[in-house]
Length: 504
Image 1 (cartoon, helix red, strand yellow):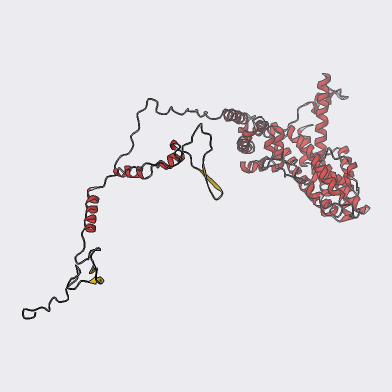
Image 2 (cartoon, one colour):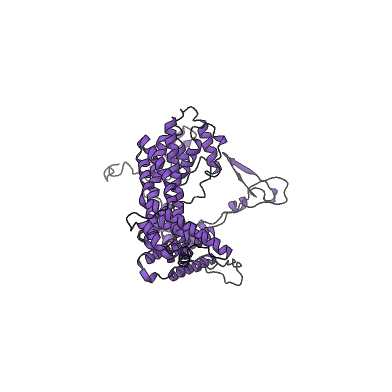
């Protein structure tokens, strides 16, 4: 296909565009179906899809893609047979554009990416329409099948059917999701079937959704085939397939260059759909998009993929800016290949890891080493003696061997305490403990204070009577007799002070 033909068909420079009759007839049926469904139901989504299918840009792009695919097939066939296809006109054969390699420009790829964005928007609108219409028949299906395209496939197959076990979902849903959908649909038998006209409009919307998805895949394949000339540096890092997906999700190379690396990581991320206790969606990693499919990420061990994933995303941001704004300086992808080699070298370095920690054996206790100096002093000696283990505790911790009877135990509540060798020394049956004199010495100040306290305790107070003194006496006449004229030591005589010289 000539580049001028491709450009005029995509961009519409001639005002009308160039589209093949086969492509126009191929799209015309879907346009009519979507238009009839839109007129019958009044849905804005169906009207939008009909306008997109009938638009000049859509028809011209799909016609160009079909011609490009046909030219590639003819080139492959001619290469397989070793001869160029015969041309009826010699002048046309001399200037056969189909044999020349296709050269895609930035404008062509930008138009394809913009069209893929429009297709995604229309698919989302159709998905909303299908959920609204089919919820009266199977309300839980939208939560079990979150993908819009898979939802359209399931709705088209199920329809008003009540027995889902006879329907083959192998190519659409995973086995765990198929089981959950079948069990859930069995409980929805009480719901009323959809009317025929509503079911017909739903199936037509499903057909339009599936056709748009197929056309989007063809557009991405077309962009992928020409990515080496549009974004050589980006393609050198992640490959042409992933590069085309990134450009399609971002809306073009210029839009991709404006996205930071942290957001490029999640372009194309999928949602997990866990059905009950099933782990069918466990393979879907959170916050990982199209970059996770790059060979640079898949070629490293799983435990290193998060680090390489972030590294590739940062390099993709640089390569996209270089391809979009670099002009002639982007070259043929030398800088992109240099970045890819840097990623590979860092992956090898990450696999090697850091230096392994040497296992040091424990030193032999007291092997050729001097005894460590311990702290001394009076206060440390007092503390050591106060916290030292008593002889009773040593005997309780001692275990006797070669004895016939078991160890004696003392039960306290729900706990038992073994007595060890307490009371078993020499089989005497008595507890033998030695009283150990304290070796602590008092300071001079403490000794003086203690001596003063003892002197005060030994000296009787003035006027204090002895405990053995008494004023009574035992006589053989009266028994107990009070001695007259005697005073108790320490008591004052009552006659003191009254006796005078003249008193007898």
